[in-house]
Image (tube, rainbow, N blue to C red):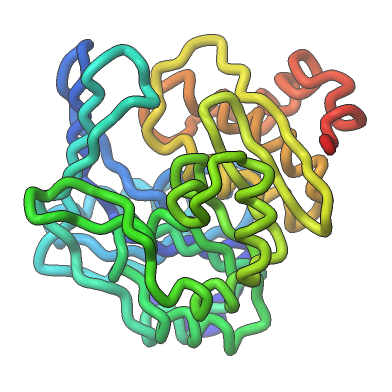
Length: 306
């Protein structure tokens, strides 16, 4: 679609991933990619949302599905889509092996040059998908720059397995980032610190003003010298894939109109509902509000931690 006069609340960029999920319960295929999980959250919340993605023309159905959802899509077609396998060897959904058999072409500065948004969320899958030149283009805008660290410390080894790398030159990119999302394992890989709070404090020294750190039990937010946290409370755990993508998108979507305390609880509730089913969230905003009233009652005034 045309980018002329395009202004959004939240624009999310990242490659579409064709996910093959293998677990003890069987094998299934899911339309993935962090941008995909994220824009579903924004649409549920009634925000004006843009999806900026790269994928093969044969996967056009992903674009069509998002257009029907009310999302503006800016697809840049690649010779191939990113194909990812998520292997869960046991019923523990936090134990998984990710591998990649093909990768879509990277983003270029012109892909986001004419798009204006209150916040841009970079949700790449592997290093090289979004480079420093793209981030510098975003920095020219009057916008919040949000990034998921996975798209910078994940590399693909010679066997196609996704692994964490030390990310040389991280200080340069992180100096442009306002809000950084990481999970506990990624934070430890990035800082060498296993303690979640200390790792978040260390990451903030690189430049990001807010750190959103997810872990198996919930999320921890660090900003302006304060910590906030909230647990994930799903009734059943089915959809582990996309947990972090949903969490950072819901945090930022709420953060545009609320403080970090309210955004932390909101993100925990949205992510909990998402984990009750596979794929992106397909719930109503009213369900999130009900969950907060029933499961997080009083938590807004209790969840700041030392």
